Image (cartoon, rainbow, N blue to C red; front, side):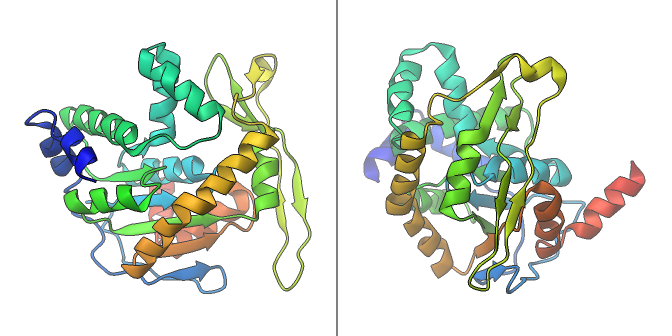
Length: 285
């Protein structure tokens, strides 16, 4: 940990930027670990005027952290900071770091704490310059070491752990497509898993692209079955202890996705006590 802290302190302002950017007020009520929908959890009521939440989204690769974090970011008017996006931006930059990251990512391995912390610090510094407050972190922390570092500079309000069966995750990852022109994400997988052993079934319709994007769809280099399975294995080995870390702090909310966005989004808003807020914004619009 000391090596990472030294990295953050490579300039007199680096750790200061990280601390100040992660210091806004958010949900104050302690959240106990529960699973939804079996045990829906009424979390603290959020003041829609402040909206300075400090949340973390966890979940296996392909579960949809970015999708739901981005939607909540828009609803709550706080920045959605996805380390996966930071990595992809660096990959496309053609820098020496980008080439190093390409080798790591294409092998399905996790990017080192040092690199992630460095990129996150730069992102927070840029956000502070634009007056950002509050955040929803997606893809960070991925290790207990990272969670401990985050604890040193801020108080996380809530950690949402999105869950899907591994077979569904693999199918989703293999179906992902990106438009090389507009950069939007789509998915060609049509998932219909029957319920068994008392668990409900899961249905997810494809997220198809508009006609102008069809000929420009590409598959991520790391979305092969071998790499996806390796990423899931690494997640189970390295990142699940992070769930235990936040479970021990009473901040973990486990949310079993019941289906695609149409089925899951309203239920997620309900468990977060945000369904009224979306209704108010819809009426105002």
